[in-house]
Length: 201
Image (cartoon, rainbow, N blue to C red):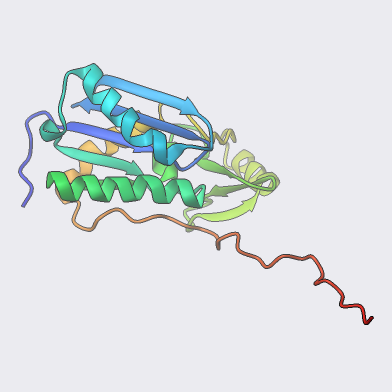
């Protein structure tokens, strides 16, 4: 059973969108954080970024109480990068890893929690329903009807901080390792190009 730390030291990070972001919190106090935009190189950048955050705060891996990680929805590869890193670190450090979905991390008073998706769509939760992929116009109309602001953000600057905050509140109840949250099938449709024609000599 995980023992409660008086003031948990939690490392939160996310690569579910075109960014790489991390934050280190001691209780509710931010000790260090990083945010970099860019959809490429997340796998190479994540671990050095986490090291930088720890070094800036004068902390070590061994001092961590828990890890928080963004589990999506979002970019398939980005989600896998962060979740795999969190599970590996938790196993090696023998501390809990807590998965935080993008809706929780973006939740704000008076705002519809929505995550941008390709082709003018968003992932959103409407009227207490399960989250799903929908056109932006539909989500915007639903938000307006509910008296909410519709302002989806792919890369909020405080995303990692929010993930760490929520993980710090939940790590004692975390049993299963974090798992990716996918709300649509992988982009693996076959090519639409016609096959080459064979011409008789």
